[in-house]
Image (cartoon, rainbow, N blue to C red; front, side, top):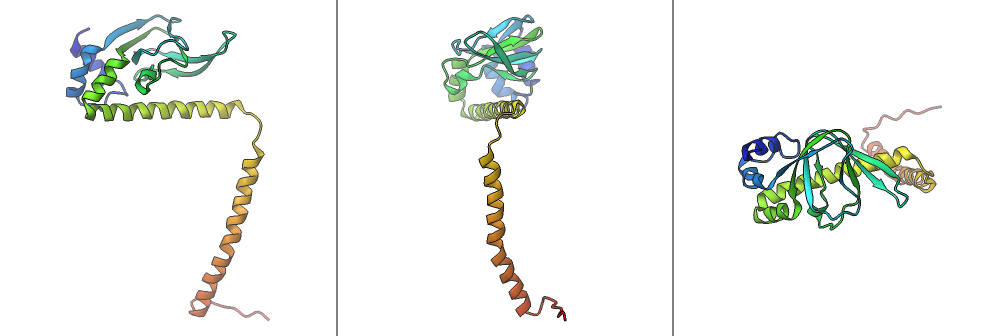
Length: 196
C-alpha cells in the first residue's frame, strides 16, 4: 500500500476525517496495513500495550475475561474506530481482549512513535488527544449503558435523596413565593378578590 493510499484511507475514517492532510502526510509512513481473519485474536487482556489501530473495514469484538477463561463482550468496534488506545494514556498493559468478528482491515501504528509525533507536533497532538478523549467518553457511556441494562440492586438512598431534595427545594421556595406575592400586592399589580 502506498503512502497516498494509506493517507486516503486514514482520512476516510471517522476518527481522522477532520485532520488536515499535511499533518497526516507527515505521519502516514509509520502506519502499516493489517489484515485479520474472522475469529483471530488481535490482542489479549494483559498483553503489553504497543500498537494502536484504526479499523478500515470489518468488526472487532472487545471482551473482558475472568480467571476461568470465560469472556463477556463489552463492545464492538467498526470501520473508523480507534482500537488499542492504552499506550496513548501511559498504560503498559491492555485491559481487554480484541477478536475479529469477521475479516478486518486496519492500519496499525506503534503507540510510542505516535506519542512522540504528538509531542513534536503540538497542534496535531492536541487535536489527536481530544479525539482520543472523545473515544474514551463514548466507550465509558457504552459501558455505563451495559451496567444499567444488567440491572442490580436498587440504590434506595438515591431515590430517597432525590425526593428529599425536591421537598426541601419546595419548602425553600415557599417564602420566596410569598415575598413576591406581597411585593405584587403592595404595588397593586396583583388583582385581589374578596370572598364573602
